[in-house]
Every structure is written in C-alpha cells, then in structure tokens.
Image (cartoon, rainbow, N blue to C red):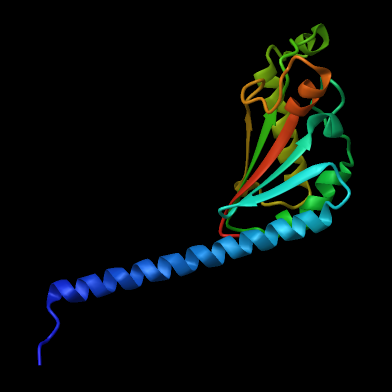
Length: 179
C-alpha cells in the first residue's frame, strides 16, 4: 500500500481550502442577497433602486429626492434613509460607500458663496451628509465612507432636463459578507 506523498497531501489541503473558500463566498453572497431583499421590502414605494449582483448591493436614489436644489443639507428627518437604517445598522463587517453624482450644470453664485467651487465638491458634500446622517441614526461609522464624482460617470445625457435629473444621484454600495 502506497502512502501519500507530501506533495499529494499539500494538493489535497489546497483543494480543501479552495472548496471552503467557495462555500464561504457563497454564504456571504446569500447573506448579501438577504440584505438586498430586506432593503427592497423596507424601501417599497420609494424612488430607490436596489440592485444585487455578485454579492454587492447598490442602492440608487435621485439627489433631487434627498436634497434641496443646489444644496447638500439633508432635512432633520430623511424618511428614505430612515427606512434603510434598521438593515444597515445590523451590519458589522460590510463596508458602506456613499457616492454622490451631479449633472453638468455649473455651480451657482449661492454655492460659491458657501465655499463650494465645483460639482465634484458638491457631490462629495452630499455623500458626507448621508454618511453623517446614517451614523447619527446608529449605523457603524467605521463601515461608512463618502466619495464624490461630480459630473463624472453620467448615466444619461446632460442635454435634457430628464437626463440631468438622472445624473443627480446618490449611490450607496454595500460590500462585504452581509454581517
């Protein structure tokens, strides 16, 4: 009877690790699908798209729905964000990235007086406002981050009012194991 060689034992061990990694990845993906389902239920009827693909959940909302035109301050009560909090506040190992986008309309005099000089800066301020709001409602701050892309990455043409409205948006992306 032949005894396994060291090389064969290593191959078996590596194969076992690979199988376990795939199983863990599948579990994480299923948990993220559950998170997406919980958010879809909580946000039913709200103008927020919830997408889940490859274990990543993305929520997209019109900036016009969250902020006043040309502004970034959220109202003291933001119902659509409040509906996300029960699900997001349970997460302990899932990164939450809030990304702001604008259209190509130049920054107006009012925003310039407030120190905002670019659409990129406005979009970042909007993302930070969402991060601060979620953290104030109990979402773990260490999981939250903000970024602003301004008029980069449009999803529609900026040549029409409808297209510009689609480009003014906030995306919340969840990446992790769903816990």
